[in-house]
Image (cartoon, rainbow, N blue to C red; front, side, top):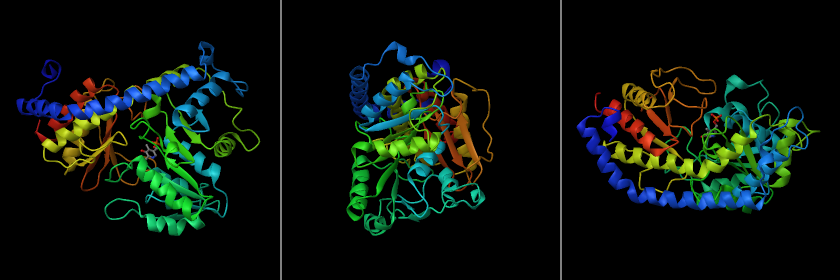
Length: 420
Ligand SMILES: *Cc1c(COP(=O)(O)O)cnc(C)c1O
């Protein structure tokens, strides 16, 4: 069937057949997670009495925006959180994380990164990246930074976290891997970090960067020790439909502080117009459990193919998945670029373009990216990227539907490793 639409070598088609057979039990496992999350979602909509009129937006200040408030109630229930801020005024994950960090940290406080150096674009927010100093980074405002690096086996250093927690106001945990070759942390690990930090300092705020983690499991970090979780609506929770946005969810008083940072200290959560975005935000969120399942199936399939090609992807296809990302060493710039071009050529949008490495704001090395997406920069849609530095690690994520993503990933593998 695949060959009716795209051309694959026989060797590559044999690989696909083998991978599909090996992946079946892991697909079924993910479908069970999806079904649970979809029912949890439906129940939150019915419990909160969502109505057709809640999809009508507001302009200007957005005072008495009942649709925005209802969406935040539903979101909070699904995440097992006291309260939530779900806004299209958040323009990316980094922006949302920055608002949340500035929202809860004050001059003299210490931010403790408990899972090592945070995501590349946060280095500039914190002030670790010299280029951003003076731009109003956390460090410019007198916030201190401390770090508990991961151990050599990529697990958290619980002893060091406990040692450093008494001096810290916020304990930052990054669930997904970012540009690091490790597996995403599962909820038990997040709970263990939270327990270690809270035992040493009961007042510490457990802050989780939940990007790429939503709906990969039947619970969220807010149900595993997190006081505040943050993510992007052009990743998992937007279901590929939300046009932009982000969320902050958790303890009510912390969410209120973040709202004051987004809007202004005298304003807060009661403001923020929604224009014409509510229908897409509701619909995308409602679809998210199903879309995340398709993305995880794509990851499982890609990991299996790569393993059959002799690569060592992280995670393995048979591992438990806590994010939608696959990383592997392409081995050469040509293979990395070839893989990206394969993904691009089997994308619904901009399939005819050929990705070239270039500089990206917030990233240190040149990056090559493939993304033929309906929403610009959306990484819940099939996309891949990697910095142009040895060992040419490629990060693959997303896939709105498995049937199409399978064709794309197979083309990428053929491109990168079968000299096509
Ligand atoms: C994607 C991501 C972010 C935010 O990235 P944006 O491109 O700004 O949306 C932050 N942390 C992690 C772990 C991520 O995966």
